[in-house]
Image (tube, rainbow, N blue to C red):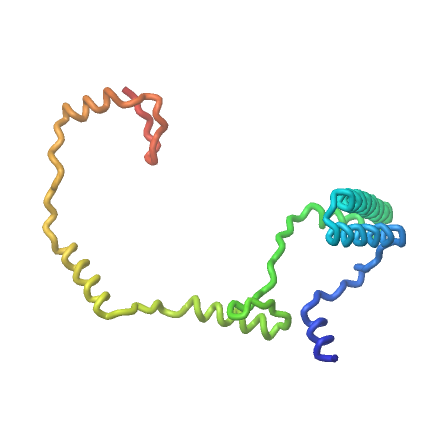
Length: 190
């Protein structure tokens, strides 16, 4: 039994001191009614039970949003400039926060919990990043080196026909003036 409890404690995020698992009694009753109506709809699958479930879900959702709003308002009313709570809340609201995903072991795809596991995952990742590439078959390497050498030693012959200045002038006369400038940012002026 203790192994299961330890595994549960290691896999779950611990509650912080300001967090509570608290719902007022009227919200608990609405949640229970919603869950019962959901169970009835899943059992019978008739439109009437679906309608009851939708109504219970809407009542619960509205009550939860009202509860959260009232909690937010009460927390904001308790802010004080003298003990610094107002400025801490302002700083938290103004700063951009990006959520960092949990480190996962690439082999098992399970999240890491201890500092030792996290250090091992980072060390393995860095080790895999800084190892030289495996070149594979030596015959393929020789073929690639040979083709590169032949390309460098190859005599370059122009396979393109020569262009006359009159052809360039004719092309420039027929080009669109309202065309956007290219990568060189040159405007077309004729």
